[in-house]
Structures are given as C-alpha cells and as structure tokens.
Image 1 (cartoon, rainbow, N blue to C red):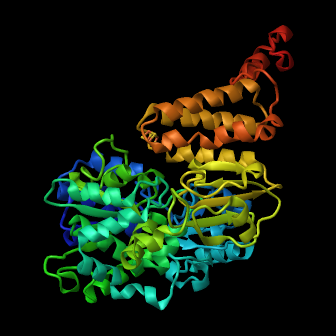
Image 2: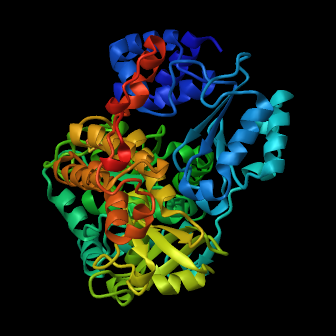
Image 3: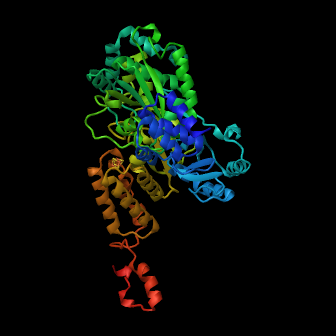
Length: 599
Ligand code: SF4
C-alpha cells in the first residue's frame, strides 16, 4: 500500500495523537518490515513532531528499524535456557542453510536472522519470532523446514500451524488457575460484588486480603488503589503491565492466553474502585500472537455489558480497555518507563517521586499492576479477604505463579502458596542433581544447593515468577555471562553507572570466561557492582550486577577455577599491540616483554 495512504489510515483511526506514536510505528514496521523515511516525514507532519524526535523513538526499541529487514524477519531467543536447549547450534544451522550472516539482511532482501532477548517461551524452547509471531520447540528438522519455506517464499500465514502452537503447560494449579464453574469469569461476578457492596467495601477487602504486587516489587495493592483514588484529579487511569520481559518469566502469557477475562475483570474492578474510566493493557511485543484474541475478548465483554458505558446497567459506571503494544524494550517493564512508552516516547525511567498513583499516565493518577495482581483482585472481590489471606505466610498472602524452565523433566507453570520451599518445587518439577536455581530472572538471586530449604515469599526469596534450574553439568559462568550481556543490551543508556558500569562488568565477565582474569579483576567487578547498585537511576542498574555478585559470594569455585593469575592481569595486551611494529622493524627487545607469570 502507498505509504501516505497507510499513514493516513492508521493515524485517522487513532485520532492523530502524538501519544500513539509508538503504536503507529509498530504498525508501520510490520507493514513494510522497517520505518521508511517517507513514513517518518508523514508522521512528523501529521503529529506536529520533528523527524529527529521520531527517529529517537525508533532507535530506542529493538523491534523498530530504519533500515529494511528481510521479508522474513527472524529473531531467535538468546535466553540462557534456550542456549541450554541448543539454540546457538540451531541458529548456526539456520544461517548456514539460508546463507546469511547473523544480523545482516540477505542480499536479495529475503531474510534476516538475528538474536533477541528472552521471548517468554522458555518452557517450550528453543523459540524464535518470525515477523513477530512465536515459533516454539525448534529442532534440526523444524529449522530445515523453516529454511525451505523461506526459500520457496511461502507466506508465514501458510506455514504449518503446529509451528506456532504455544501451550499453557500448567503443571500445578491452586486458587488462581482454578477453572471450576463457580469461577467462570464471563459472568462479571466480581463486578456484581462491586455494585452490590460498593467501592469502599471492595477496597477494604483488597487491602485486608494482603494482596501484594505480583510483578516482584510486592507493594500493597490495596494501598496503591487507595492512594490513587485519593489523589485529586479529573481523570484517573488503570494500567496493566503485561511487559513480562524478565528472562525465564512466562506466567503472564498463560494468564492472558487462558484467563484474560479474569485479568480484564480485575482491571475493570480497579477502575470502579478508583474512579477511572479508561484502562490500558501494555502487551510485550513478543506476545503479538495474543493481540487479536485479546481484542476479541474485550469486544465480547463489551457485548455482554462488562465493559463500556453503564457497565451491568449501572448508570455512570464507565470503563473500557485499549491494548498497547510494546516493541522489544525490557526496561519498559519498569512502571515509569512503561508510562513513557504508553505516551509514545522513549522508555526512559522517570525521576520518582512523584509516583504514578498521583502523576502517572499523561500526568494523571494511575494504578499500574501486574497481570497476575489484577487476576487475584478479581477472585478476592468474589470470595473475600479471609478466603485469600488464609493461604500463604504471615507477610506473603495467597499464591504465586512460577514459570519453571531449565534442567527439569516438567517445565511449565506452577502455582504455589507463598512459603513453599525451593526443595519442594524442584522435586515437583522433576529436577535432579541441581547445582543452583536462578529465582526472579536475570535481576534475581542465584540460590545454591545449601539454600534449597529457603521459601518463595516476600520475606525470604521474592520473585516476579522466574525459576530457572541448573544441574551439575552446567557451567554457572555461562549464565552470568548471558545475563551480563543481556543487561548491556537492555540498559536504556540514560545514566552513566548503568550504561558504562554494565559494559565494564560485562567485559570483565568475558575476560573471566576466556580464562584471562586475575583476582584483581574479581575485585574490580565487586567495586563496579557496588557503584552500580548505589548510583544507578533505576532498578535495572541497581539489580544488573546481582548475578555477578552472587557468583562472587556463593560460587567461588566457579570463578576461582578460571583465574589465570592470582593477582593481576593487564586489561590491555601490550605485547600483542606491539607485535606488528616489532615485525616491521625487525627489532625486538626480549626484556620489554611482559612476563605474565611474574606480574
Ligand atoms: Fe537506564 Fe540503566 Fe540508568 Fe535505569 S539504571 S535509567 S536502565 S541507564
């Protein structure tokens, strides 16, 4: 389609708002496989923005490109658990079959193959995205088939359906994943409870339940809703954070795929409690395959009177939900970055305070909760606070969804009451000879075997839901290196401690993996890590050094075996740098060589 016509169509549909810039760019990317210069100029004119501003936004998001990608744009997951399942070898196989270099479009423009951060399919990896759609369970055969389909120019819509199958893999359910008839979400039971008992009572129930944010931070949900409701404003918003980008986390995928009514009902409930009439679901770009189904469920809810004007016939109870797509930026899972992204900007974290409950989306009071939190709120409104807070521990009420991947027989989703031990979980998922578990993703904690009696709870091991298992055959340094590279890639670059510190740390980890590091480098890592922890602007920078620190504190044997020299190893190889000059001049001074064994 002609670019001008296409831009006119998408901007007219969304009311020509600068705040929708990211959504326009997202559509253009998938229509043309890049953002053509003409599209940037047209958007600039239509939205009264500068082309430089638009280019700045494009440059921030991994899934947006100013240069054409291949007609088939393939992104293979670079997550550590996919590495463990052979993703690197499969990537080589695909590149070899197609005759492409990684990250370079093939000369005929047919295909690009590159890697991306975790795609949220760790329970059924290795996984890839082709033109934004997930393909799971890659193996040699599937890779060969994909290469043939690309060479025969078969449209992605005609590729075998089983390639795109994403299963729920629910292995253990409790109250949240209960699918009994009583908890049928399509009847609006939680909203009926709101209308029957009133917003104050429902808010009291949410508070008394002890429900805390399930994205990992654990702030009291009732307090958050109350703070937002009590902020003076003519308009409030409800935002559902479905940008689960933490490596190894895929629980929100299941909730959105099979329990979306429960999530949307929780958002609507929140809207009714705080006095908001608009909700936004921020869906991570990797879950593009869910978007149409979610839009259909929203429409069904409107048709049943559970969304829109006068919900369930109650005059003045208005609430509706839009879906906004993310575009491949891990930092946008941080709530203030997410707000920037929702406003069509680069996802740079805001300075806080003020917090979103008083200054959120478009500067208005906003509740931002995780997908799982909203789903829990729906059930609490139906069944009451006592029902919920009778489960769990003193400080952690209810249940937690865990996304389990890595070295175990039964990867998938497990719902546990808070307080369940790591040991129990490992037994349930069929993990044997376990060396360590990484809980809460790349920014989380590495738990060694002597800590397996610790529990999943806010007061012990807090987690957003990622639970990656590593058996004794694994080199834990591979994990540390993978996470160090991940954080360099995902740093937004706004502040120096994270931008520079993360790169320095990653270089030192690489040096250690090469076997060139010394004790001095380990001390350097500690110093950089503590600086990042204390001086970074947001949670990404403060948690990024965690895997390195855990390795130093808890896995000394892992790095000690790799130390080449016990004291000092220069970062710069002077001899290698001088070699050309020595060869050309034919001069060499044996005494000028650095004798590493004596340094
Ligand atoms: Fe950006 Fe990292 Fe600084 Fe956070 S800590 S603002 S991600 S550079």
